[in-house]
Length: 213
Image (tube, rainbow, N blue to C red; front, side, top):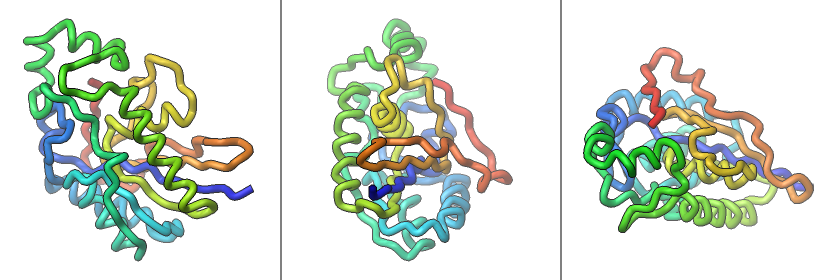
């Protein structure tokens, strides 16, 4: 019974987080605090026997993944299975502006996010399907090993919900801070098991933005 360990990592802070914008696939880089968060995270990942790091292609995630890869001396590549949710036409906009101009749709996002349908955007169920498929592919490739996936809140929460079978509405039942890591394991008998969620003690001296919308 080979047990595979997967570190699910949220990228460090960007201006989009700081300004409370809908990020989606706007390619925000890490800000200064995000670089510090990623550095602390990279140090925390040392000695965890990572064999590989996979990342969303967006700068804020890939820069975080690069620091982890360098710290752990393991391979790195981008994987579109873990790219952030596509949220046209909201991407880059202030959440407060959307709440004011589109209150019915924003209310759906806050109360029943899996039901939100925007023209040109992905649904959370679609994100869950593609990210779970990508994760299963990597588990087959790295069976019995330990690897990391660096991604976004809008991907990691559906991914983890799908792995654990959390029922709808599920998006707001999990919380992951920027620069945090969670640990998921998998074996052929028990399937997925959440070993730990939203570890952030490595950032005790760094500010964290609490995002609940």
